[in-house]
Length: 347
Image 1: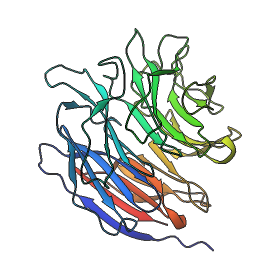
Image 2 (image 1 turned 180 degrees about the vertical axis):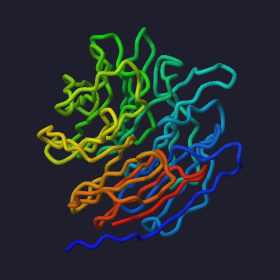
Image 3 (image 1 turned 90 degrees about the vertical axis):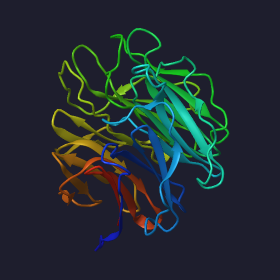
Image 4 (image 1 turned 30 degrees about the vertical axis):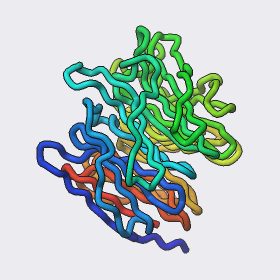
């Protein structure tokens, strides 16, 4: 019988009531657990070297420009063997919604950070503020975002092969035949050890807003045809602001979790959907025993553990969770809670 328990809990309080802490994102390289989040126009970073038992004091990574924040907009974080890299969509103050995907990196465990550099090569094309970043093997990083360099919304991406020191010219990841993907749902991305990159996004086709998956076999240089996820479809002439999550798996078989109408669904290699229950904003992490899935239903944070059929409630006041797998079968989970950031490690 598997025994699951809460390991550690931590809460990062906001610096002021006017600028609550928002949109946490977690990453790990197996030995250290790292966290980023936004507060006003500031990007914060914290690190734990003992699986979340203790955390460094939050440090400001950047505080210039106007950062896109809220509704899955906000900073992203990834870890390679040499670097910690954080990205966020930032625009010049006073220029409305203009924004670029800006990347910062640290080579000393987060003590110091490089100057920010733009990842998108057409200025202000990432002004929708929705993006994703993932790390693969051998210093590979990949960022993707909703792009507005032309009429309509497309998915563009860029690759770094040197731990975030430089970024490639932008690549078109997907262009919808309708002229636009769903304009306000964040993309998600995941890379495996073989250099395959998976990008999930919500499409907009003939009045439907379904989730699609596209993959690259060459480290983000080119992408194949997009495939619809699940067996059902969502007729909707609006944007649900919910992009789900994708997790690369062995032998090129990703696992995805996403929302259709008011329900959360899980799909595996065979693309057979499994209904998990009502909710939104799902995230996923692997473990030795199978996937953990977390999502919100109203303000409640729900968690489905491997091998269980029903979800439990972890918190009655939560929003926008992020989750990563840790060594030994545990996972770390972070979420917004009353203007603060809560973090727990569970198994």
